Length: 213
Ligand code: FES
Image (cartoon, rainbow, N blue to C red; front, top):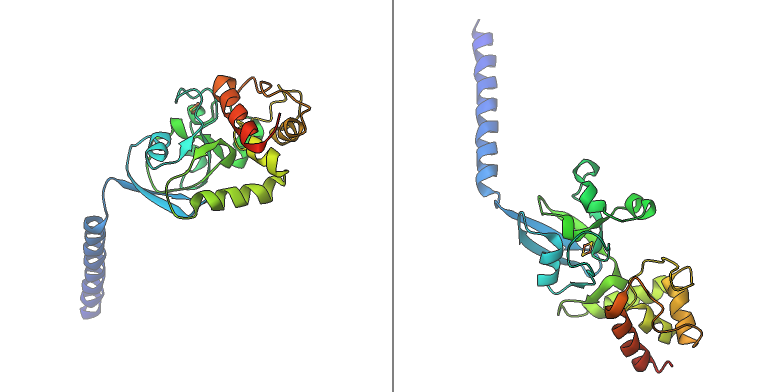
């Protein structure tokens, strides 16, 4: 009998300690915030829960192309969710017009995501028109882009302002090939139809800077 009482007492104590720990944990937890890690430059943002991800990124200085202005139709605000977004939390709106390939790779539309927890995301560099004023962030992004694409210097400048759809509307299978054709004077500066007027303007500016045309 004394053994039973001792065991029951120990079990009760263990349960009490667990309960106290759980309460302390909850009290220490910062309510209402999510941490969003940007893997491109290692920057971590602390944002209120419920905030729209694209709006939060823009506010932090990441100028996503976002051609449709957040309507979920252009896919130019896409980010790759690397951690913190389980498959069962991905809605149809978050996938929008993304191709199967991009969906499988983990891309989602940032304009359709409200923050529910911590996230780790990768931005699609060609669709980031501006980076925050963090020392070295823009340079790092540019260096990484060069390694990935391996374009001529002029084509690199031109590619940086293209949407990155690889849609073939310009007559070239990828934006990289279109950029090289532009740099070589073989393609027209108004050839990116999906990009519309904003891309045409950026392309002519980039072409002037690159000494093309
Ligand atoms: S801004 Fe166009 S889909 Fe998000």
